[in-house]
Image (cartoon, rainbow, N blue to C red; front, top):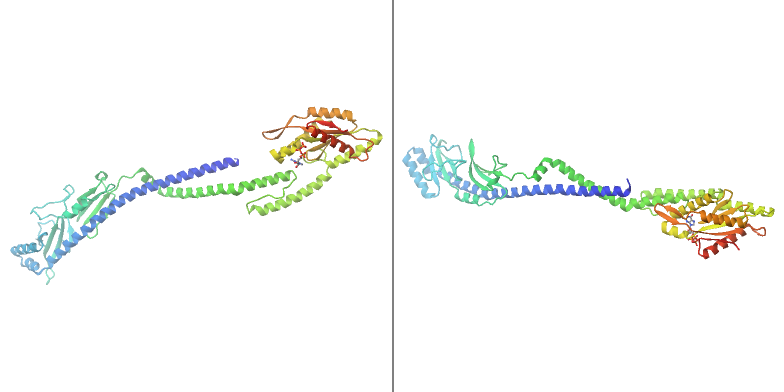
Length: 488
Ligand SMILES: Nc1nc2c(ncn2[C@@H]2O[C@H](COP(=O)(O)OP(=O)(O)OP(=O)(O)O)[C@@H](O)[C@H]2O)c(=O)[nH]1
């Protein structure tokens, strides 16, 4: 996989992670909002209802206790006379006109009030209008709070009877009915000792009611409780509640992966790409037997090792230079090098005295610097390599080809007078390729200039023929390049 494809995959993974993370977060947010709405309704309801209920219960309890402990009450119940009990009841009613009070005797089997000590809040009957009014689930939401307080004989601690006190809780009902609950349905239910709970009041969104309530909230100090129905579970909440642990793990994993991928991406972009390119350039330079003065490496971990490699590279290139100086082949063009050119030239020069005629052609690629500057040094090298190869292909086996340096080549035509050499040079120009490939997708139109001369017996030094050819080459360049000139 190449680098950009890998980077694209990382990027796609990052986007996927962000999307899935955001989706899971939204699921949680939606489901927690639902819960918050329902909870707010419930808190609101219980807060509104529990304070008045508790204070009502307390008032009733205090009243009943005061009546039960009153000496006149004790006397009336102890006497066993009904007329005394009625008289005391009348008496009490003058003090507590709003209270609905009655006596119950320990052996009274007609009442359904469970007269268990000491004080109980029970589902019961009202005595307000003289008839029993049972409240059950089907009945209208009427509330009657009943308290029974035992009347004790202070002497032998026996229970003489009970003060039974009732309250319709009208105020409570109006509070309950005014509760605003969109997301919840609440019922106020009363404990009937072992009997099923009966519903006293209802409030909220009745559409939410199903067979079973989803939450119970006891109201402390009373026999009542709130039964609560929440809205049906949404898909979001359902998903969250079913896969909660997996979602949390995935969310954490997403965040971790995002951070890792993002970090890797940033890290590779900022440091690795640059460092890898530098190292590749370094190895390419080594391959071409050259080194730059500096290479910038950003990663401190790589830097020390790179320093060692750089020093080794320098050492190696030094050795390489020594070796290639002794060797005869130019490492780049794979033609003879300058050193072996000089040896050859000396050889042919010596034979001039014997009457042999030798010529030489010096060649220089036109605008070579432009290739280097435009397409890079590697492209320049490729041009040198291919130029050398083409020369070898189109010259005779007996011709001595050498690279003198840079983009400059020289051909010695042994045993070839200038006239014949001129023909050979012309033939070479015709045969050389018109363009060469520098790298993938980059073709270069090949132009070269040449200077031709002949070794002369009268020359005092071996290099004089080369100097003449060089002047002819200069002439060719001046005359507009891409031609071969004969030395004067
Ligand atoms: N790629 C590469 N470039 C080299 C090498 N040796 C020398 N050069 C470069 O070759 C260029 C030689 O350019 P010149 O021959 O002076 O100039 P030119 O652009 O060819 O122009 P003309 O010869 O006047 O047509 C310089 O920029 C050198 O740095 C080599 O081994 N490889």
